[in-house]
Image (cartoon, rainbow, N blue to C red; front, top):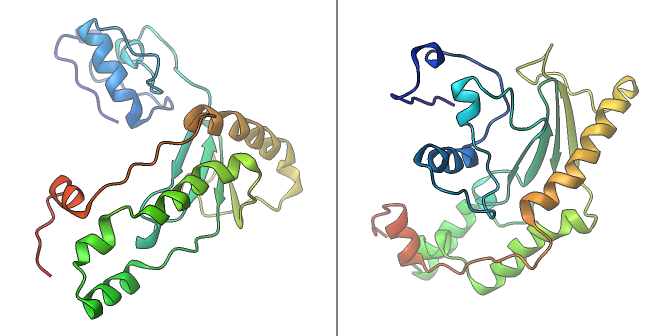
Length: 208
């Protein structure tokens, strides 16, 4: 992440650090610089202290996930990491592939955009299960553990190596906490978007 603050003192410019930051930190950071109170609902962190050199870090563990566009081949997964270790969980994906959806849409004369980008009523149940099921005990179908210090390219999966059981158990414990912080414990709010809305949002031209 690159942050440029033209008002920052010279000594704070050009700094490079290896803190654990995310894109969700951008909005709280901008609000902090503007002197606006950061809403409690925002999950990101204010990075202004890191930028100014007055704060060491904002988090010890980083949680990331993907729940969307799984029919395009993106895996449904979650990951937790610190500066040294990274743990990843992959879940079973039963979605029909985008290629199949396109083929069916063309065969039946359905707009391709409607097939690919609309959230239909049954999809609401699917995505709710994606959000809720891991918290309720859904098991991953594949797991990975990487020692980022010696393997930054994540080439050597150590998940089966019992020598690193302590590191793995620590990350699993953090996962159990952070997934609830990220997703909450209330009923998930899955939006039902129309094809026209999604095509307008992403600049997709209707050309069936």
